[in-house]
Amino acid sequence: MKTFPKDFLWGGATAANQYEGAWDEGGKGPNTADVITAGSHTKARQVTYKNLVTGEIGSVKGFGKEANFPDNCVPAVIEGEYYPSHIATDFYHHYKEDIALMGEMGFKTFRLSISWARIFPNGDDIEPNKAGLEFYDKVFDECRKYGIEPLVTLSHYETPLNLAIKYGGWTSRECIPFFENYAQTVFNYYKGKVKYWLTFNEINFMDLAPFIAGGVTDPSPQNLAQAAHHQFVASALAVKAAHDIDSEMKVGQMLAYQPMYALTCDPADQLLVMEKAQQTFFYSDVQVGGKYPAYRLEKYKREGIELKVAEDDMMLLEKYSADFLSFSCYGSSTFTTHDEDADAGEGNILSGVKNPYLQTNAWGWGTDPACLRIALNTLYDRYHKPLWIVENGIGWADKLEEDGSIHDSYRIDYLRQNLSSMRDAICIDGVELMGYTMWGCVDLISAGTGEMKKRYGFVYVDRDDEGNGSLDRSRKDSFYWYKKVISSQGRDLD
Ligand code: BGP
Image 1 (cartoon, protein in one colour):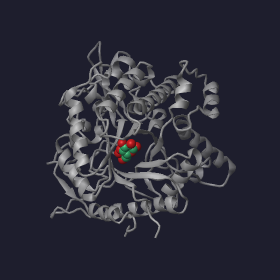
Image 2 (cartoon, protein in one colour):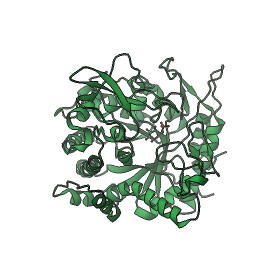
Image 3 (spheres, rainbow, N blue to C red):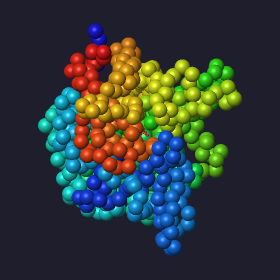
Image 4 (cartoon, rainbow, N blue to C red):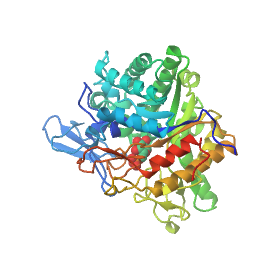
């Protein structure tokens, strides 16, 4: 039976701000994620702020475009508030145990992010924080012990808080040299230990949640366009730096992607889907295709947005496009112009209306058994570059039984369907896929809601939504299932 290639990189994915904790230990500075409170399925997470003149405190909605701060107010940590990122699930003090569990499952790769503010506490420092560099060095050595290849994101939904306060985040061009310095520092330090890198997690979230994606404190359409442009140039400079420092290094783009369906065959619905897709493809057309697409430039003209571009920017984007395209994909989304015929959709920020053919989890995220094959074919046809699925999985309120077991058959069912769809893309369609990292392989806090309850892992972590719990780790049923999948090279999905 034809199956996954021998060198396929099986593994799991995490992000520092949702997993690492130790937010003020080892010389780390605060980052934008450290000022975002917990929420729930029905209650939005908030960014807290302080008025520098009156000392007054307040908050604005964290996910979405509302994170627009009143005059004289800056995002700040407020005493007495609960911020899930501060301890998260404490990878900082559990990394040996967690990587051993990944080794036990047979992981070939582990996606994690470096917290930028752990290396440059203020973002604009000249010299790096040595303790921060040493921490990740120990993590990478631990990975090597188990033959695990790290895949490292440089900025996963976090920017050093000082850059947001002092410069308005990525709206300012000054972030480019700061990021370049950061990238060069870690590429040099971890040369020979880390081969695969990603620049900005789900870079297309700049349009949807700019404070989270780039510390943007004034999200006008002009600022969003500018902030995305600065991240593109910074990514291209990171590709250049990686290739100069070590010809073995590969730098990928990271896109939030999901197949988009029209609810009806009305051409108006197809056009709507086409326009929605352009909002996502804009980011990969620039970063992987190397050029600003015409549809986006026309949109800027229509909206009166005047992009400020430095002389070499367009050359850099073309010359240093990403080596591969990585993406997250949890399901699909459906759109229609016939809103009166459709039930409102729920789920993540890319969603449209409810697809009557699909099931959803308790947070309204639809599970689509065909999404990976469709996503892989669409992206491979468009760019002809190697792909890597760096997030896929399902959040569920798992139950820890008295005897310490966790029976997550729903997760196994979801993954079985998704892996089979991914196998079809490789074996039937010939798509070039480098690897698969299941999201949140060890339980961590949810980005969307800040909850612990929305768990994704193969490994359960004892912690609740109020921050209580021993942080002890336990293997779920899916742990043993994934181990078997990896050892059979994806042949045995039962
Ligand atoms: C992606 C993010 C991750 C992760 C995941 C699941 O958008 O890159 O950081 O959290 O979604 O989302 P959630 O945590 O909201 O369930």
